[in-house]
Structure formats: structure tokens, C-alpha cells
Image (cartoon, rainbow, N blue to C red; front, side):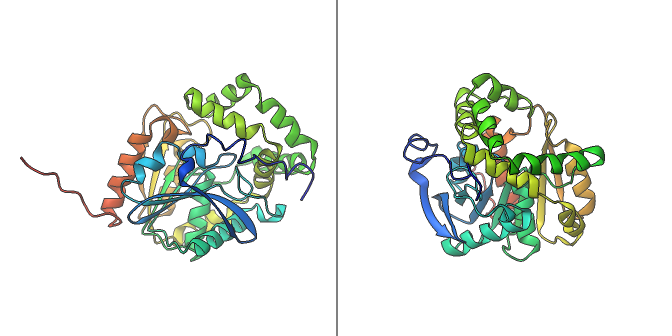
Length: 305
């Protein structure tokens, strides 16, 4: 592990007012010490956040889902309060296997898998590899497709160079302590968050260890095998995309829909990449309705008076 990667958020300091802290626990699995939140009752819903985020991303959505599901929401490998593995494991395959190890340790078998951005790719990879067997995958602005054109030639080498330099995470984290810089970063996703949301992201990007793990993840990320394998996905797939997403435009979900015959597509107007943080009740309603259609949840009959 390179210098700076151990400089992670401190639970006793940074986690003292962490959202849904009462649901938090720490678990040893797959050679890592995981921070995971478990709440609710019912069919198991496994939640996977996106690159550079943590369980705070589900702070308002998870309690709403917990009225229908047993929610299991970890900080992914190297993110938030979960320890960081060797850099080679911060890949799509490596993170998928590590998360499967956590599920085994917790003895949970997800009935529904809900992923945001890169988290959707992780859960889909796990399903394709037989590591989990949900009845439904819900993708929230899912990052399924590789960068194309010049971006493909530029991004990965740049990320590798940045991740290999131990000074880069510290530089990023120094900038991350600037509220204006974090505000611009979040606005660049097409989303508008409240003060609490911005403060929590500022806390994470102020941590060199967290930033370093996110950079390692980006440097190792290869979506080409997932793109190749998507047509053989047999699990139900709901692709939720947002019109104002500046990170992953809705046409990514449209292309995935063409590759996966059983996939369903829902477009939400006026929200950005962090739609589930902007309007959690709206997203929860869409997930519950999809779970009922997929047979994950029993259909609730409205009572007539």
C-alpha cells in the first residue's frame, strides 16, 4: 500500500455524526475491515454506491427502502470507512469479489441489487459471475460503458499516473477542504445537493486515503469485458437515467437497453447524476414499484373505504 492510502476517514472523528450511524457495524471479510449499514426487514436489498462516495450517499434513500427491505449498504473497498486492499484489487473484478466476500460473511443473499454509477457495474458483474443471484438489478445512472475516442486513450493513463504519485491524493484532499471547490465538483454532476450533502462529500474528499482509493479504482477500471458480457444477463434490469446527468448521459442507459432484451428504461426529468440524493422519495417509489413487478415484493393492494 502506497503512502497516503492508510490516511482514511476516522470513525471516531469523521463518523461521529455519520448519517444512519445507529445502523453501522464493522465486519472483517475478504481481508478487509468493512463499514456496512444494515437496517429494515424483508427481502434483502444490496446497495452499492459510486466512485468516490460512501454510505452517506444513501442517507435519505436507505431508511425509505428499509420500510420494505432489509437494506445492506457497505462502503465499497477503499472507500469511506472500509479499509483499502492492494491496488490491483481496486478493479471491477476485484471489487466484485471482495463485495461477494462481505455478503458471504454476513450470510445475506440479495433479492434486489441497487447500484449507483460504478456501483451498478459492480453489482451487474457479480450477477453475471454467479456471485449473487438477485431477481432484479436497479441501475441509478449506471456507469456501464467504457470511455470512447480520445477519452479512452487519455483517462486511464492519467488516472494511473495520478494514483502512482503519493502527493496527488493529498493535493486533491487539500482542495477538497475548500467548500467552493466541492460545490463546483458536485454541480458539475448536474445535481444540486443541500448543505448536509455537500458537507459529507467535503469530509470524504478531504481524506487522502479515500481520494487515493478512488483514483486507484479509476486507474484499474475496465468496462470492456462487462460490455461484452451484458447480452447474456438474464436477471431483470431497471435502468433509471436522469436528464441533467452531466457525468453519465441517458444515452448510456439506452445503449444498455439495446444489449439487454429484458431491460426496462425510465427517464427522470430535472435531476442529475446524484438523483437519488436530490429526490430520494421519488427514487424509492420507482424502486418499490419495480420490485413489485419483479416479484421481489408482494404487490400492496390499496384499501377501499
